[in-house]
Image 1 (cartoon, rainbow, N blue to C red):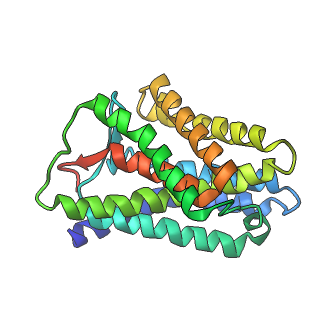
Image 2 (image 1 turned 180 degrees about the vertical axis):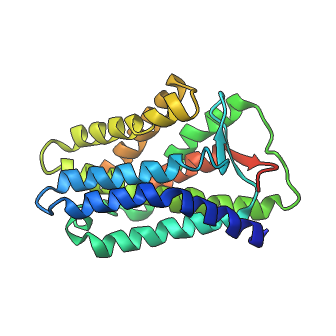
Length: 247
């Protein structure tokens, strides 16, 4: 499992390097006096990292919006931990953008509870609509642990970018509600390539991500990025299943 996992991860990194290299050059040439553009570059780099997983068969999305992930928990957990490491790296490399991130607002535990409930409100109806039992694999509990690390770790990175940087930046220029609506729309729009080209599933993906983005944006507006990460991660975890035979 681990040996195969390292092979998958090496292929993934090798596949990404040319594109991420160009994003790095673009970011390096962009002055700090243009924070909006720098945020956009980081967001697009993340979109590349996410969408590149599809042609490499690391995850799949069907017409019922059920997300299948590799049945290799080592790969899933490593990607989740790597995402958290990128959050730390971004904090060190872009302190001026990091100041935009509001991790907590109001009651921390209450916000976390609201975030989880919002995630369940998004994910559970879809899981029931899909009416599919989890595809059991010999070590399903281990897979589920790896999936949880990926769901919350990778979405922590995405939430820092969309609800931390973007929404925080927008709040300096427009009302908090409008900033949340813009971040939600941007979040859905950044799934456009995935919806219309990579998977060709079209408007259902865009509608789901818009609803998800609105929930995360509003939760972030009231309770902060940690709570919106709970919303995002919980929703994804609820609709994820093992993609058997692709480890």
